[in-house]
Each structure stands twice: as C-alpha cells, then as structure tokens.
Amino acid sequence: MHLKKLRMIDFRNIEKAELEFDSAFNFFVLYGDNGAGKTSILEAISLLNSSKGMQKAKLSEVINYKAKGFGVLATLGSGEGLDDIEIKLTYQANKKEFFIDNEKLQRLSQLSMLGNVCWVTPASDRLFYDSKKPRRDFFDRLVYSLDKNLAKNVTTYNYLLQNRMKLLQSGKTEGIWLDKLEQEVAVLGVDILKSRMRYISKLNTILADYDLQFEYVGPVEKNFKIQIEDVEFDELVEKWFEILKFNRIKDLRINSTNFGIHKSDIKGYRSNPELLLESSSMGQHKKALIDLIIGHVKVIKSLDNSSICLLIDEITSHLDDKNKQYLFDNLEQLDVQTFLTGVRKSDFEVLKNKAVFMNIDKGFVNLD
Ligand SMILES: Nc1ncnc2c1ncn2[C@@H]1O[C@H](COP(=O)(O)OP(=O)(O)O)[C@@H](O)[C@H]1O
Ligand SMILES: [Mg+2]
Image (cartoon, rainbow, N blue to C red; front, side):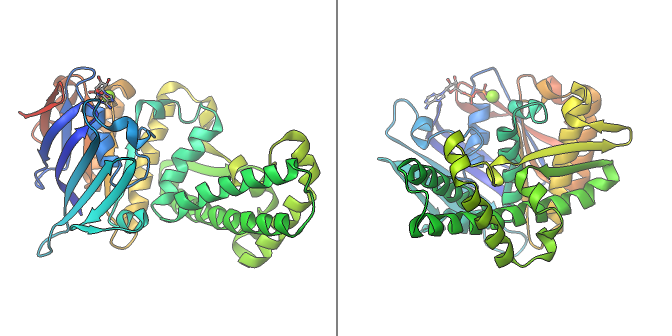
C-alpha cells in the first residue's frame, strides 16, 4: 500500500493542491522557505491515520483562515491487480467525516487498518531528554500500529481517571459506582499495558542487532514485572483494582492517581558501549532515534499485510551528514515510502536520482 495522490483543499495555508507520488520512487522531498507549507502537507497525510495528526492540532485550527472547512483526499495504491482506494477526510461546521471510496466510516479505526503512518518532527530531537509525557505519547503512537484500539483506550482511560478523582473529591470514597469505575480503569489499564509490552518485546528483538533496547518503567511495570505474560487477564485486572481501591485516600490527598499506565516512562539503553539514552550526547541521541525508527519500520514490516509510510519533518536540522546517510541507506533497504521536508534542496543531494523533488512556495506545489 502506498500513497499515490494527495489533494488538499483549504488546509492551513494551502488553498488547493494536488500532489502525485510516482510509485517508482520511495523518497519524496518537499523543500521550500520557512512558512511555505511543507509541514502542513505532512500533517495532512498524518491525519489520514490518526485523529489528531502529527501537530496534535484541533481540526478547527487547520482550516484555512479564509475558509469554513477543509478537505484532504488521498488515493492509495493497493498493489498490482488491485483497485486503488480513495480516502476522504472533511471537516465542516465542527463535524469531521471520513469516507473510503465515498462510503462514510463509523469509526476511525476502520480507516487506520489501511496502513500506518509514522512521523519524526523537530520535537523528536529531544525525545529521550524530554519529560516522560511526550515520550510516552510518541511510543504509544508506535504501539498503535499493533493495536488500533490503543488511542481510543488511552483517551477513555484518562477520562475515567478524571471521573474517579471527581468522585473521591465529592467525598464518595466507597461505593458501588467507584468500584465499577475502578474496575473499568483496571480492564483498560491491563489492555494498554499488554499492548505496550507486546510492542516493546517485538521492537527489542529487532533492535538487539543494533545494541539498543527499550524498557517501560513505572509503578505498573514494577508491580507486574514477572506476571504480565504468565498471569490471566482477569487476575491482573483484579490485582489492579485492589491497588486502586487501597490507594483511594492517598490519591485523593495528592489529587492524582498514583498507579497506572499514565505514570509509565520509557528508558532506552545502548549496550555497546553501555549508555543510557537520557544521558547520551546529542549525536548519540539522534542515532538512537534513527535506529528506533528503523526498528519500528521492521516491526511493521514483520506483520502480515502491513504497510507503513514515514513522515520526516525538517531532517536537515536533525542530522549531520553521516547520520543522514545512515538513515537514507537503511530506509532504502527497508523499501518504505518516505516524505521528507527541508529548506534547501541541496541538503538532499545524496538522494539525487532516488527521490522526487517538489518545491513548496507560499502554499503552492511545483514539481521540479
Ligand atoms: N489555519 C491556517 N490558515 C492559513 N494559514 C495557516 C494556518 N495555520 C498555519 N498557517 C500558516 O501556514 C504557513 C505554513 O506553515 P508550515 O506548513 O508549518 O510551513 P513550513 O513547514 O513550510 O515552514 C505558516 O506561515 C503558518 O503561519
Ligand atoms: Mg515546517
């Protein structure tokens, strides 16, 4: 599966654009001045696979200032002998609608079954130095490729935690409602935990060849360390529930639920030479990010029938020439459709003859 065509209408500064992506190429370079609309194009692609997209923007924010709604249309090639698939996302009057081949979808997860979109933005430059929330979110995006219910489950989980806190604050520290709510939290928590563990174990198997390993750490991981694979789902839920119940008064006092998947962090280690990513140098950090992306692509490729497209925003500000070459060499071997942005065309000299170059200028797309 690959993106053949993208049409955008009134999306950010792009009033109308149509981009075609020749299937003979894997690399597509969008270059142009700051503010030209390069990131916006990647963002439009990212919205085809995720509810918020790579900029985590509200859909009302991405409507062109002069318009009342926007549309993103994509044609996906499904491979030889198979029909193309048309995807359409529209947003008007506060209403988002998705269509596949003009048929309206009930749930976004139906759409995301089609493929995976993974992105690296300038913010990823600080992934292992940053606070744990953006790192957890970044990894959850990766886990999402394996479990298309993950995003929805995390949202519901957080919503239930808020409700739990409200109940506690209103003085209801006992009762059937609170029990029921905590049980729901526990079911979702175990589900999310299992998905994360399944992903990280696949990733680590692949990254062993790169001397790189990742590990989830936090109260949940500590408590369930050995049991997670061996113990029945229901048993874990029961234990989780007991912990929440036991901690009610303590949680109320600190105004936060102390136990759960929302407290987890991810640590990265290099084994040779031994290195903790959070205390690595900038160069080591960037190399780890590349290896992580390569590992992720390999995880996706190991799944039946799964395709992936990569969005790499402002790569030239991320990487020196050596790392850039390393990334491109690996991507070439992996054979993935990759969209890259940058200010200067010359920054992508190494991709000459291997990429389609497009100049983006004040919201207009010009093929080289
Ligand atoms: N809703 C919107 N309507 C119109 N223009 C917008 C909207 N949101 C952002 N912009 C503008 O679109 C331009 C393109 O942004 P961006 O895609 O980030 O540029 P680039 O990545 O090429 O530097 C910016 O000048 C930004 O201010
Ligand atoms: Mg940009």
